[in-house]
Image (cartoon, rainbow, N blue to C red; front, side, top):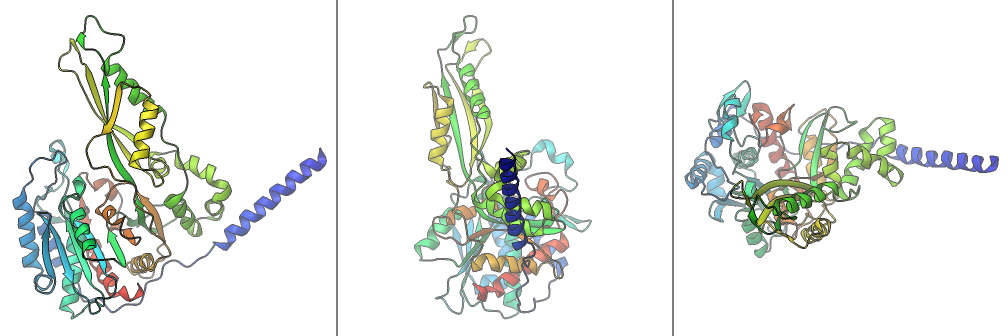
Amino acid sequence: MKRFAAAIALLVVALVGVMVARTLRVSAPPAATAAPSAALPPLDTTALALHLAEAVRFPTVSLASGGPIDTAAFRGLHDYLQSTYPLVHTTLSREVVGGLSLLYTWRGRDTTLAPIVIMGHFDVVPVTESNLAEWLHPPFAGEIADGYVWGRGTLDDKATVVAALEAVEGLLRAGVVPARTIYLTFGHDEEVGGRYGARTIVNELVARGVAPALVIDEGGFMGKDILPGIEGIAAIVGIAEKGYVSLTLTAEADGGHSSMPTERTAIGALSRAVARLEADPFPASLDGPTATMIQAMAPYQPFLQRVISSNLWITSGVVSRALQADELGGALLRTTTAPTMLSAGIKDNVLPPEATAGVNFRIRPGETVASVMARVTEVVDDPRVRVAPLDSVGVDPSPVSDTSDPAYKLIASTIAAMSPGTTVPVIPYLVMGGTDAKYWGPHSARVYRFLPIPLGDGDRARVHGVNERVAVGDFATAVGFFMRLLQGDAAL
């Protein structure tokens, strides 16, 4: 027995030794360093803020209901951009795609080089009538106050559109001609899936033989204390995004008068089906981009956290349980299940022959729309409950882009230049929402997601929420990001 205990102790010591050795090998890697680039043209932060504020004043709202949109607002924004960025519109070619989206082409000196694609969208989500009173400044007034530009779209995602155009206009003013071709692609329906905007643009560019060296869209962000164990400013860059599908569950039963209810009712059967789905969530798995994220965090964490993060081969169970302690962590590990809509009955004393529920799923890499439908059908386990797609928007998870690719390294070095003199950890992660970048997934392995605006406390809740705003200085930082990115293209 003593020999057995000694053997176990020796095994534990050896295991700890291996873990410590692995940890020490990742203890002090260099953070991303700013790539050398030409000096930026001077930026007039006041003028930049005014231009963004004016863009906010066009209520380019997309409606999830599919109802009619204010096309005049979109075309008004088009005209405003044309008058505000004269060099862009005399030097770059401009195409209107899908009715209201915009595609700009800035021809490079060497058209044999793979191009860069900068994506953004200028449609915004509606403002809920009941929340209007909570806005400190009207959501479409584009007011500048207290050092911020206020209004819908200042973060999602007119900021990207205006910042990219400001960057190109400034570079043109400075006489810059890019080595490789640059495409600016701005969608008009990202908030409702991007089917007519971004998808059409991507298909058109692919048909023209475009194979990008880099695609960058919104999705990641930077801010202070945003990652556990990492103090100060850090940045997260999306290297993949979850898939998306909404399914309808339709339960059938005999109708009739409520005074004589049948043993099976449609509402009861539907309730049981939804309850089964919630009680049996998709399995959690710590792999893919989330495992890559945890490992990338390790060098910047305190030693004990570093031991755990750098030894997932043995600590993955512990990390997985810790992540599942909250909704955000759980969503990183599994396909999520969210019942969002219910419909049944027309009168309180009539048994409905049919009841329906809408359930939304955000699909983790490794699963597909088809596998989600198959599992939902299996878990519901009721032949009289039909499972079908709610509409045709279902999208599989994107491929995972490589963090060792020169495109990712260019983004990381450009992020480092946003905070000179400060070490900025750049961490890859899985985007849980959807972006227009998903349409490049089948065509390119160099697709990344990052909103180049430093977010402050509470700013993430402002996206699609109340009092959306961006600091005037932070918006200027975003313009500088795109200027540096486009001048650093030799690193690709």
